[in-house]
Image (cartoon, rainbow, N blue to C red; front, side):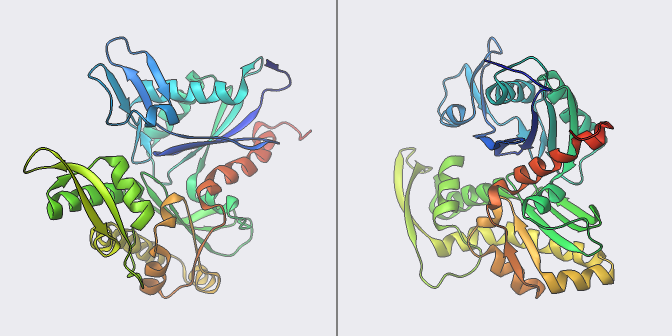
Length: 336
């Protein structure tokens, strides 16, 4: 079906783990894992999103299921372009006018990395591409009025990066981006299980452990979960029971790296804005902020009240969607 008009305005949260698309007037219309399955002999894309994620670690030799974004930036340009094309077509159908697209990027990316995102989206069919920093989009999505002259601190923990920014008058005053986020938590779990139980597990099992019993602050009651992996001694499948207290041991190191990065940004914040943050608190957004106890740990170490935003996983996409309203002003066209 053809869509008439000026082409749709789409906001895309191009995450390391998940791609979320927001269409003006419709809200969030797509939420898929950023995974692509490619036939290595022909280069043909076989599956994208949820279907491709099911193939991770389970493909024959000629099929490679990969995540084309690593640590918040494009690591495989060609595959990212194909993935974007697939998602844009899924959202728009067959369009007569190419859509304008606003894409989120980590706050500390280089000009080369920015250009890669713009080029990939243009090649995928965008008429015009705009970029917005993730913490700013997250703050808008969390319902913070960023246009006022007062400081707001946002900690956005995604799959590949944690972006921390102090925002005032619509821009970030002090910001930092570290490559410690959801993926690093998963890696820490894989390493810990291998070292402590002599068992190798895959990324998906590690993620299940993190979601179900992962924590970075002592729990009142210890919970446990059974997992299966390959025993390094026998080479055969084996089942072990993992406790949440073990998860605390595994995850505390990457969690403290995030706390230290927040501390570093607070140290560089002008005193007036630091007083505002102390008053209002720190806002946490992104899927990584749902890790049990991370807000308590941050609150304990900084002495500042920490709040997890509502609909935290979609915050960045929602903020991008709200920022789409200003596209006409950016294009120099009067708002209709």
